[in-house]
Image (cartoon, rainbow, N blue to C red):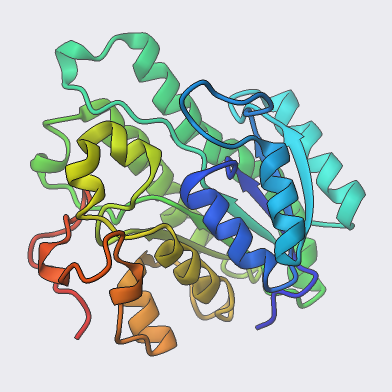
Length: 287
């Protein structure tokens, strides 16, 4: 399935994994709507919606930067209307925006709890709810619509909740959207899948969590970008309701067997990479 001239509505995307996915899809000739809050440069983090839009244009895509806080229904409605007015519709939604605080119950104040659940779970639901009517029209036009959410596989073992309950609840809320939408809108021809990294990814968020030591045991965001492109090219009526892991989907659907180029530190053996949260210990890397 071609992504040429398809319109992608992406939440977040001014940096990190989201930006890597946007640039990868831009090289396929897609239109990218960057719906995010970052209009002004952050003191510690690179990138704004405008620098992202410039990079998307240079990569071969068309960009529309829209200031949007996905916690605000009016801003989401405005961003979606702008996207439709600019590109004529929406074919793909990438739920990338997310908030994180790896704190236990007693160390998580309600302000942080509300932020994570409003951005992650509520924001994903709101963006999906607003975009799905346009995805139905995309399906009717034969444009292979997808919803791709960056959230983990659903695994109810307590070890994924005990260290950071609020964050886990918020991320699993995103995954529950995938589970529900894959069934609710299957007959409409809309695919809903999640994508999650097998290893930690070298982003600013990982650097804040584990510093240089964890960054050196990570892969680059490009592995998530390549995996996202593979997922979004799958037939929507057949490839849905899945919780994809980046290297596994690249191996199974694109035949990739050498992942060395994705190591943040060239030459790092796969066995020395750090597994990400929510990855079962018995999940092997691809052969």
